[in-house]
Structure formats: C-alpha cells, structure tokens
Amino acid sequence: MSFFICAFICFCVCFSLLLIVRYRRHLRHRRTNSTVSTCVVLGSGGHTMEILRLVQSFDNSKYNPIHFIIADTDSNSVEKVKPMLKDGNVSFSTIRRCREVKQSISNVFLPTLVATGQSLVQIWRTNPELLLCNGPGTCLPVCFAAFFVDLLFGRTCRIIYVESVCRVTRLSLTCKILYYFYIADYVLVQWPELAAVYPRTLYIGSLFAFALAENYEENYERLKVELERQRQANGNTFSWKFGRNAYFKNKSIGEIKKLLGYRMLPLPAKERNEMPMPEDLLNLENFNYPVEFDSRKHWPQCEKVISFIKDQANCGSCW
Image (cartoon, rainbow, N blue to C red; front, side, top):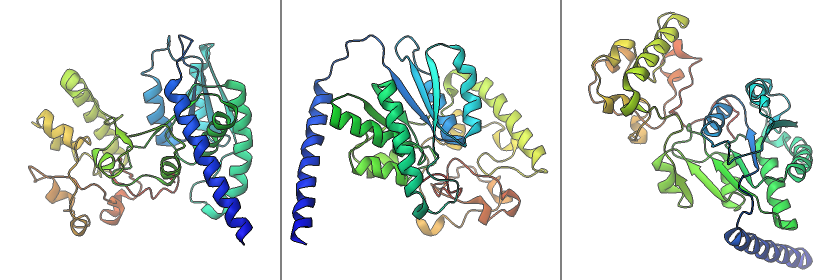
C-alpha cells in the first residue's frame, strides 16, 4: 500500500512540475508567424451554433488554417462546415463520439479512449496554436490530446473553452474537468453569475447578443417574424422566452435586452418554481426572469421548447 501512496505522490509532484513548466512556456511564447493555426471542436446542435458564431467573427487573415473536429455521428455539424470548405484554409475530420444523448456516463470510458487516440493523431498532424471549444463531452478527448502533446513534447497550444450560454449558475461537467485540472488556459463564460463563482473564468458577455443599439428596428422585425413562426408551428402556443408578439409592442431597448438574456436577475430558489402562468406573465411590466426555469413543468403545451436561459441541461448532451 505504501508503494502505491509513494507512486501517487511522485506522480502528483511530477505532474505539477510539468504544469508549471507548461505555464511558464506559454507566458514566454512569442509567435513567429503572422497567422494562428486554429483547431475548433464542434459539439453538436446549439454548441455548434455558438462556436460557429464566434468563428465567423474571426479575421481570416489572422486565424488560418482552421481545422474543425466533429463527432462521427454529428451529420448536422458536417453540413454546416461544408460551405466553408471552399476556402482552401478550412478542413475537418471526425472522431468517435464519446457519449450519445442520455447515455450513462459509466459507459463512456471506451469511446472516450478511442476518441482520445484519434484526437492525438489529429492534433499531432495539424499542430494548432489555438484550440477552441465549448462542449459538450466531444471536446474532452481533443483537449486531453492537445494538453498532453503540449505537456510532453514542448508544443504550445492554447486551449480556450467557451462555456455554453445555457450555463448560468454552474459549469458543465466538461468545463469543470478542464477548469479544475488546469487543462484549459482560459475558460470564458457568458454570464456574470458564473464569473463571480469561478474566479479563474473570464466573463465575455453573450454570444447571442443582438446589436440592439445599432440595429434595433431590424432585430425587432426579425424577432417578430420568428415569434409568428413559432406561434403557427405550435398551434398558437409560444416559447416562454419571449412571450407573444404583442408583448414586444412599445417595449424599450432596455426591456428587450432583459428579455433576450441581458443581466438576468436570479430569484430565490423557492420562487423559481412559482412562475406565473402565461396570462399573468403578459400583464407584468417589470418582471425579472429567473436564472433557471423548466417550462415543461408548468406549460405542458411547451413540452418540446428548451429555452436558452434555463440551466438544467435536461437534454442530456450538455455534460
């Protein structure tokens, strides 16, 4: 038993020293190229949409080439990337999906091991200077691969994890692993409540932010069209996120910002399940939305609606 204890202590000491060396090397690193070789992990669904929104804001003259890594069962993300392949500096590859939606975490060890091996090959081949991801578990083996290649072979790859906007009060399991084990160089969050709880995170605001001050009328009309589409698709029901079209009428920019997710004010836990019904909600003038709320428990007609404000990840993919 004493042997295993000594071995564990030696491992922890060596690992800590390697972390310090890696950290100091990153501080001293100065790029010699004018461009940044970038690797982006596309999670799936909303995760893909969030990270692509961030990638689309990149200066292509600085961030290239860009290589996307996608789970082998995520055909939707592949379709979103294909139009970008016209640029010769964009490519993609697939790895084994670590965990399917609602699959037990106890069954992810072997798929994760396979995905890590595939990720090592891709990281070694592409040699990125920047690894960008925002979950879910698909990004873990890629981050592990980049971290250990960086740690053991002296390469310099900065790992940046952008937490999903649906995480308001607590980090996802994937993010906690990268955060507490110092695998990610930077963890960016989209809610100030998270930055207050986790001091090493950086609050960047919402990736879903509309430029209301500059394009107020355009965004307002876009929202009305989307709400009408939702209303018709759901048989005159609506998503609780925004309310009925009439609810936007004569709203100020500040009020619409609140509705779109700006500076949500958390309610006490006992009040989070005491949301008013839709008829009452429409009559409230200064209603502060709770941090988390599962509309399916209150409005059966909205069973398939998943809001971007709730922080529960009931879909099973955000781990």
